[in-house]
Length: 127
Image (cartoon, rainbow, N blue to C red; front, side, top):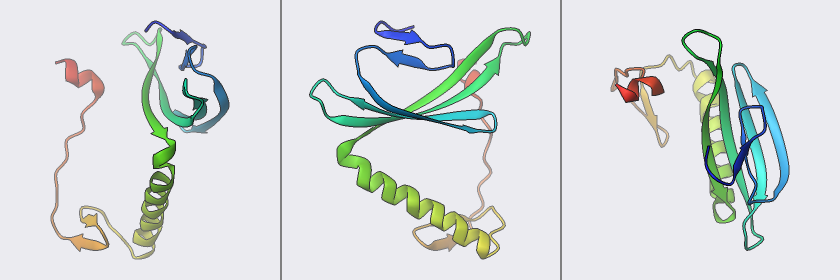
């Protein structure tokens, strides 16, 4: 574990060097999302969004938490929310219009290009 961090028992490391102002946990299936408001040393506010997924070792005995974190700074709040809202609206629109998958949708245009994706697990990266 990195210096300046401590594990709080729920798969999150707490940064002791930053003040946590607000925290909201959202449980969604096998994942938990944490929305934390923190302060910089200069007293500016920023958001960390952490996805935490509980994982077990090969024996199923030891619990690990796979985490991904995004730092979102005040100058990006408006554009981030705008992009997120547009993306969620696009998903609703595509569902209403019978989107069946396999089509690339970008900037209100649909391409008939089909892509074959391979699922890559983080464990595969060490191989």
